[in-house]
Length: 324
Image (cartoon, rainbow, N blue to C red; front, side, top):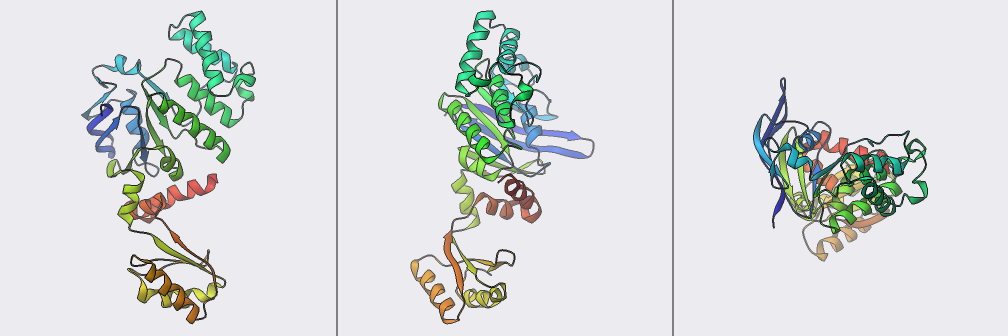
């Protein structure tokens, strides 16, 4: 597969802070790479470097076949960039925003209006096309922002936390629209702190922390790093947690993990139905009142805790939970 984005050994220093510390990455044409990491991990710096807004201190990168330092104009002609906040003129209508940029990009008056109409339909903004952008909802504004990024039909699209602050329904709508672009052959580099967003959209995921790539793979590959499926048991009374953990501990691969707030225990068991049956039987014999007894696959939350430790993982998990 041809790579639409390639970077090797990218570094960027701000005083004593090393924002990028030898970042390597590659994104196949027509695929989505999710760049996942806590605040300050280097995600936005990576995007800004690849989009020619920053020059790296060292290392090389090519986007759409062109060097991001020596051939900046060629790179800019082939990319679209959506930052963390919608960059549209709120005094103009949605249509006017698109037509203005089309004219600036020399599509011509007729070409700019035709492209604007096409994008307004594609992003379900026709009914609001002639309303000022200041009257748009957050989700509509983000859709308009994405449409603006696509006015010149870019080969590569950089999305830096595109759904920050959106409600779940608006996020799901934007995800579908991003996937539509990928189906049309656009390559996407997506930075996000929403774990389910990377899980849903990304073909491959890069986990970064403190300016370094600490893991790479598909969602399933990263989850396998954490281990196999885990048994999750919820008890009726928090006072029964310790007793339930004591019952499960002899059957477990490692020590049970207790969550007193959720009155739950997670434990990794040996593979096979026999281990599950033994756990259920042991809890029943011990008289533990169980509200829920279920197998749970590792999630990207678990990957974060495993790879970056509790503090980094918690930042991402809390942001994801706050958006639900």
